[in-house]
Image (cartoon, rainbow, N blue to C red):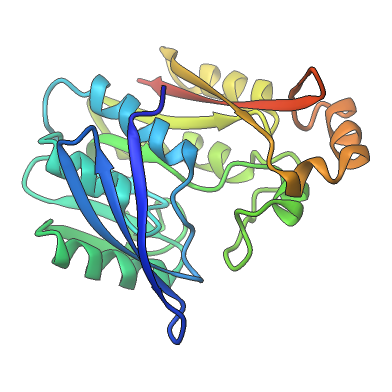
Length: 252
């Protein structure tokens, strides 16, 4: 069950900026500003937040990778999972600008930087890395409602960015540090998990959430079946509904 509620308050059409109240379990309220060029929180965001909150038992130095508007890191900060300040980065300059404003408005101390995956962080290391970079097949992104104005340079099978994160993350983790990452069945799940298992001693699935595909995707049945037949994505056909899933993993 998803325990996060998002309520849209209003839209300023002139600037294409939404104001969202993001509520976590009636404990944390985040006033979140979003513009059209920044990836919007989705159900995967909700599951990632809830899983990480329940998994981190001791606060530490945390990097929100692919932070977008910053909601993941801000909730974790407010929940006491982060020491001193939030570290966050995104390839989008607009996203970082939005993040900095959101952190200012929500009294969250942040070190925010622009760049792809770990490029902005040199030799810095963290106790926790929470990955929220794009993770669906580019073929799915093109027909989905999620990437209208944001990039999704993930490759045909949706694995390019997450494998890059997994490959480099060990260089940026302290001893006993942990990487949290979502794996979506709208990508090549087995390829991602197998790669993580080669890089880390421990790779554990923490949670799963199933979703019914939106109409924007189910309107392309032939394309979905083609991608599934090539093992690029996976889904179940349940009574005429296409059901996909998000898994959250931790590796150390």
